[in-house]
Length: 319
Image (tube, rainbow, N blue to C red; front, side, top):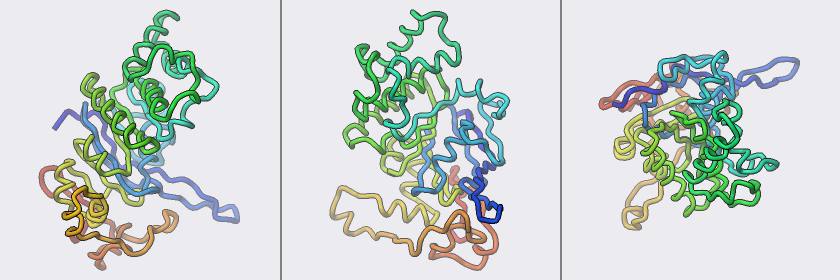
């Protein structure tokens, strides 16, 4: 196990929602989530839309202030008092390469902004050299520096976003579905670039995605989320070959297999019912309303993650 870089303990992120007559009720976007990320490690975070993956990533960087819980980065607690300093070590690559770049700024200004904010360059010459170095690092030409974001393809825009994140030499990057808006061929290029950067710089990633094949390829460990909670964490190969939680089993059964014979012989696990509203969460286990193994105990109390051996953690009473 690599040395721990990021430790998240009992993280909660509730958003107040108006319920009429001046009342508000909490929308539990992230509810009691705990995990660790080692130095130079990639932790994949998967789950269906609306389960809280992006909220976890944004809360780690205090783009949303946590409702409760602890975030400890390299032994130092992260809080409002030191978040500006901590953002030199923790950065984010956003999902949409179209809306995450300012259309009024040139590529040079977009990549140079973190350098200006954190006062990392002594003069304009040093700043220019650093920007061109970062652009070359992510596969962009120096001629692109004076252009605007709208002049680039989706893949090139995402490279600009990655260069911006790398500008402050971070130790940890939250990758919020960085390839979901890109063509499949471009996805492969960007994924390979993330892996090359990790080898060269030793940076750690929290890689948020829907695509289980992509996550399995890039991650050392994978965490599965459902309705604001982490229900399973394991090594990537272990999770893929021996899923324990019924939700993880269902997710993996939906992954397409290129061999038609194997695909026909495999049984698809279909979940019944709809995802409950995070405003009206079921009692006990959040997944029990769609689970074929649910018992009375599941309705009474919510299971916490328990180790099933080799670091494979599952939150389930009956598996």
